[in-house]
Length: 531
Image (cartoon, rainbow, N blue to C red):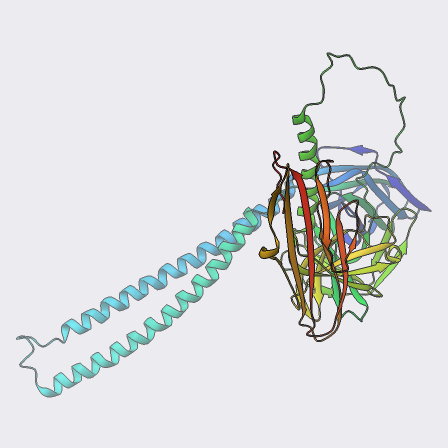
């Protein structure tokens, strides 16, 4: 008979019962939270008894607890309890460490005392054999014997002092380890654990396999990517990774790990529409203040910063290639790690490689010299939705060189994903004003100002490149301001926005110049800033 039982009660103090040593068998980590499954083989006695599964995380959601078991018995109740007595184990460990720490300190003190004694003996030997009126009458034989004894004894003392010094150094090194261990235990988070108590009734004794599952909140994973491009003629290589972190208080050792794009903390209830009423606002009604609007903007900005902080908590991660199976569910995607995996509860992030892709891309160099003369390499990827990518930080590599970090935004519904691959220093762009051609004139009631810019592009790469150059001319929003475009060097002008585009093809070591010239006419009695 198969039995499945959900939690029905929560208590505050643990009852006595049969302690069950269970093992974390598998874990499904969500974007926020994780479902932990524990297993154990249990001997059930005849009659009614309580099975106490201990050393459970204190941060579990009690309503998520499920108990599965097989056998001829009945599960009467399931209770979850916080176990503050579990902290006694930590205290005993601290006491043991302090005892060993004291033993080491005592040994160091004894050896330092011995060193002091040897030092005094050495000083005494040297004083006793110093030539003085009392020992000038010693015969040569006795003097030689005394000197030989001094030399032998001093040599022996020096050897003993050196040995003790080495022993003290080793003991101090060992003492430092115990001190550091005590510091880490004293500052470890979470002193409580919890128990899951299962009350069962059986007519006869039997053995049964139990499986417990529950949700913990202090665990998560976030996506990260390595984006590599060998050159502009090769596909993009994308390594899809997961930064996994947990501070549940439980050690996940050699577990079956699954990463899910689901988020159990999100409200799963469909929202309902209420009537939308319109009415005239009375003149005395207060308007929304600018400060209120600022509060909204700050709140949204804070949310964004929090998300970015969570995604950016990577310190000293190590990539571990594993075999992964992808399963697409109705509302989420799961990545099942085929090999057993271990994740510590110390809060340090571990990086797990999920998948690798070779994706065809269209490359484009682009520069906006009016703002920055840095040339950016971009890649356009079509039909990217089939890869189940999530928004995340990305490390950029081009031609085997690390270019920096970027952000892969996959929240767009567009068919094309634009990836910025960073700055390429192999293409040099300058933008300067041609001063002798830029002038200001006053004619009649109007002023005329001319601006003349020269953009120069040099390809220092050993391969041809296609470069998109973007600049602009001003757009008038007043009929008294007239703008005349005088030179675009073949650029494509959008009259509504004033943006100009040049698509240049440059061979290796090739150089091209672009001239942008325009004239602005406006009334003399007005002030206008023209850049």
